[in-house]
Length: 436
Image (cartoon, rainbow, N blue to C red; front, side, top):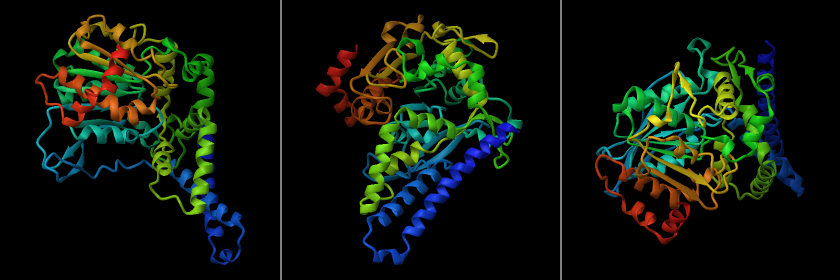
């Protein structure tokens, strides 16, 4: 009962702040105030607008917003989002492009379950959709999943990935981003031992903590500093009566958001101050750069308590993946069992979430994989977000990933002119050479 009250108190605080913002905006926008020249009136209305929008976005699942893409024939092709596999804790979505023959590259994009929705990869999906058949793991908000659905921890997550890979078949190329990187590696190794014919053709691991101790960050320091008992007492709450998952133990999204913002509080504070001034001057818009970013960044979801705690304990503290001691459903998963799946790691030189060294450790674990099937890339000057959705992804990493996929496909799928030009540019080739 104590945890329910805490959860509902956080939601009440969020709701109250949204109401305060809406009230400030409405009151300061009253026509009579237009007679005064006091700039505080406009600033109050602008502050209220930004505050209301920010707190309202925290409980809304963003839309994918991918209505259509331009095809090679120059016409628009509508995009349908189809559920290929439906499960209580997550679905496998297919971005089906109308009037287009199936693409030779079949990509399964594994979205992180680390506080944000899978829509955080919207720009990644959009960039791949031009040249690939794209499938994405869409994880559900734990507060909306009834307790009767049971538990969901790192082993269940891994088995979900195994089932998704089996569904798509052996001609699939898996791309895992951030948190799921070690579990995607484990799922591939699990298939290598249990169902070799269902293994994907390639596995691209982008900025994930395969070996958290390879390079210390604030995230890994926190995992070492806090005991599991302290974490359970301070971070875990029980979903309130308002939601379908009432009574489920979770790590609340609002609590996660507080941690996200505190890591770069000065930068976020400055961004909101500047946005308030832009709104007051009439320079802001509904889809400006600030709103596009924060509409997604502020939208958070709850994780099941068992998933969050098992991630911290088994991946970060005990380093079960890094030490090749991970167990799934009572079976030890040996990364050395991967002998056919080509593996590529991508890291950002300025990544403060998963620092360089943490992800590339996956290649050392794949002892049964020949060097010809191993590739690594370190992107100079790139932060965490940039390596999968920012400028670095668009200009350098995406072409390299597509080239890697083509090199390890059953058939040599054609590289698009856009990808080939970027991949062979002097800047990209120079960076790839330096990273290798």
